[in-house]
Image (spheres, one colour):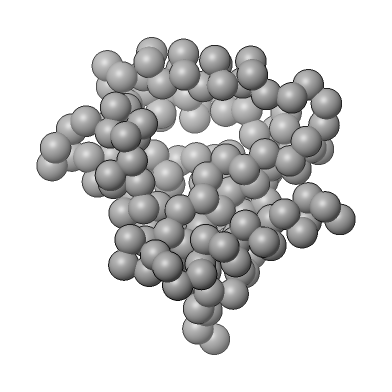
Length: 151
C-alpha cells in the first residue's frame, strides 16, 4: 500500500527513507547550517544525524509519523525521560557533529531550560521534502500529532 499525505506510524525500518527526507527538508535550514556547515558532507551528515535520533531516541520512545514525503517526531509527556540520549547516542552525535558538538550541546541545553516544567507534548522534528512542500504533508502530520496531544 502506497502512502501519500496520510500520516502513518513510522517504523524503525523506515529510517533510511525518513532520514533522507528530513535531510532534504533541513538542507537550507539556518540552524542546521550552523551545526552542519560541511559543504559536500552536509547531506550525508544530516542523514546520519536524523537516522541516529530516529533509531536511537524518537523511534523507540516517541510518537513518530510519516507520509510519503514528510516526517514528524513527537514526544508524549510520559516519554520525556526516555528520549534523553544515552551515552552511546551522545558519542555517535559527537562523531557526526565533530567540532560543532559543543555548540549543539549548548543549544539543546538552553532550549531545554526554556521548556515547560509541567507535563507536555513536544514536537522535536517536522519536515517535508522540498519537492513536496505545499502538498499538505506537514499540515497532515501536525493535525495528527495535535489530535493525539489533545486526546
